[in-house]
Image 1 (tube, one colour):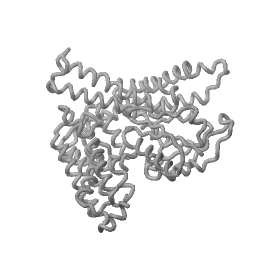
Image 2 (cartoon, helix red, strand yellow):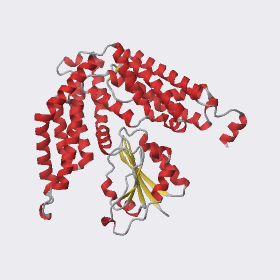
Image 3 (tube, one colour):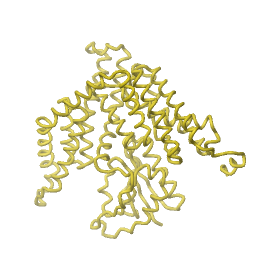
Image 4 (tube, one colour):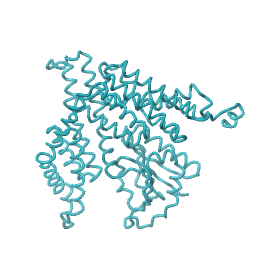
Length: 466
């Protein structure tokens, strides 16, 4: 019997990672095929593939927007699929893997066989950026919530040297947030060049922070360090006796030196100017312009339900937290909660529009929505994209516009309703909740109006339930 192995992973590691794994496992079971799926989610690597499992596998499925340590699969046929493709069409992905030619015995000498890039599969710069974001998010979450905790003692309590509030601020702002940009840059570079890119990436990110270039400078430093280190790995040739010096001495030294000098003398100042202009513009936004920005960010959050457009809006807002700009984060989280919550509401008010399975999925979507897991809307969007997705976009756009227009703010980049009890984590809580409620209603109403009836009689319901 053919055995398959797979790796799934997304930047936030909360929903897509495990939904893709479950879809592949279910499809493989239906076909009587054994599969082991390694997941790279928020808690780290789980169900890690062993060397023996890799050696005996017929083919490898890579469905990951973060680093999957692809080098360990050298010599194995590799099928690359977008996370959304694995979630929606797990059976087709399994079939592609089964159709690959069996690898030869001399695996070391055989290059990996890869399928043609499938539509929607994200590689290159996007994947590297998302890898950096995935390592940055825990720091931002921890730092943001600890900063919010410091405000429980009073909005100015942290100004008193030596107080608990001041020490909480030191942990959250001066430590966790201070590491945000270096970690972003370091792991962008790591995704590109593996360990060789880590040192120059971290140093470049630290210089981006110290020069005021912010998260934009960190992104630039990460890509610069990664591609420079990768180029040096490819072009520097040494005798075998000296080859061991390359990853531990030559590349770290020269790459870090070049990246550092470029960040100080060439890149840092222009990016700092750009960040200053962006920050000043965001801080000066009036109610109307803020609402328009919120509308755009909200629409982006629902457009591809956790895909690259969604992640672009999210990354932009998370990056601004380090510049003490909290409005976009509130709009993004509220708008990201709206799609699954709106679909849950729609399944409650109009049973005839949904199958029994969809109504059950609606309950799960409601819970996911409360937790800021936009991906809870994926099953509905995949089943009826031309009616559902416009409804989701409209609802989230309304939510984002209201959240920013009413000056709601958010200091934590994740958590959904579970951050609400933390004092000062959410500014203008009533506006935050009102924006979500309004978006939910808009989403539900549009879905109800646009979708066709799915169950029209008890007989139909009996057929659906078997």
